[in-house]
Image (cartoon, rainbow, N blue to C red; front, side):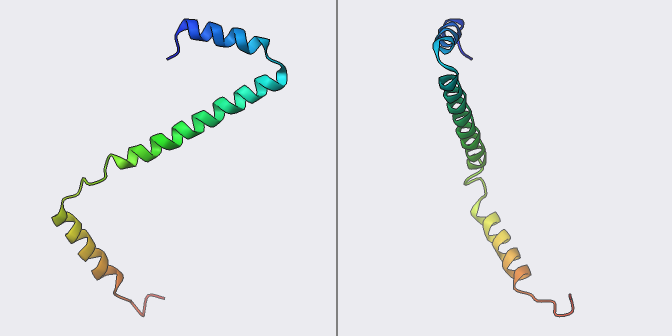
Length: 76
């Protein structure tokens, strides 16, 4: 959270800018927020990296291979 001093300085400076410059500031802030959101989503998934033990990985891989390599010709 921004400090009150930062907020006052930011708003004072923003008030001195032209409308076009203020629009650029808003666009920049929005771009930063998008990057932050996308980074948070990525790091959210990364927390699970390496969480499966090798035995579980082998069992899952075997089940996928066994199920995906079978073709049911009567399915359609």
